[in-house]
Length: 261
Ligand SMILES: Nc1ncnc2c1ncn2[C@@H]1O[C@H](COP(=O)(O)OP(=O)(O)O)[C@@H](O)[C@H]1O
Ligand SMILES: [Mg+2]
Image (cartoon, rainbow, N blue to C red; front, side, top):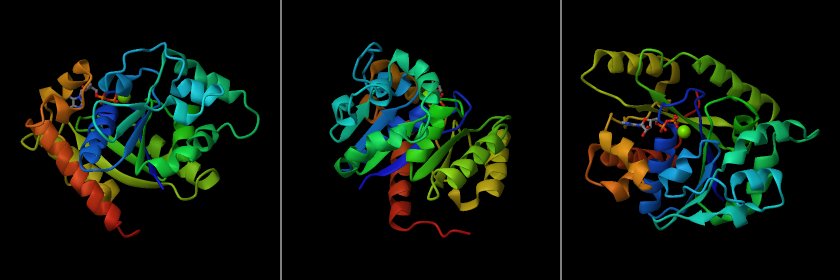
């Protein structure tokens, strides 16, 4: 059965999509079957895997709001083992449409993903930068949430709001939801600021912080414009190495889960 993980942080530009796509690609390269659900109306994960057709009628929007099944919307990527349900322009309206459902509006994605669970090892949901009904749907469908945090001065701002949303979803909708881990992105070990953020985050999240940190790396920023994950764009760069390391650590933790404190 697939493990479902949401990549979430209500801040934009912190590395959610890059981490979702490049960790998924690294896991696929190690033999796992991974599905990305592009749950952001901006569709960056779709573009990053070479899908630039934002008017598609088989998108995650159609899965949520029409009769399209999740299977029908799955597309193969260029990398073996890596698949995606793309986003489309109309996903921006889904939040409003979902809000009009009287019962079960938080569980629409969970129910739609049910039939796909035996076909993948992991389903990664790339969340939008907000804590609205799309993110609540994603968290409700998930076993875990992975939080990318950018090493910058305001890194912790808004984090308590997100932790509160996770707590509420856990309490009312999905008792088994847990924080899978925290990934520091755009990290520079030589900068005092990055080290300060690491210290603060470690105080708050303890062992949940992955040892593997993602450096600021121009190749990571270039890869999406070629529609390729980093390991197909430049597998020798520091960014690719960092995501490889993150994938190994992620898999090691899967085998030996952290003790709950
Ligand atoms: N480690 C990194 N080094 C350099 N640029 C990065 C890195 N991670 C992400 N970026 C770039 O920063 C921008 C925001 O990243 P993205 O993953 O799209 O964040 P989010 O999904 O949280 O909005 C993108 O242009 C992306 O290519
Ligand atoms: Mg994004």
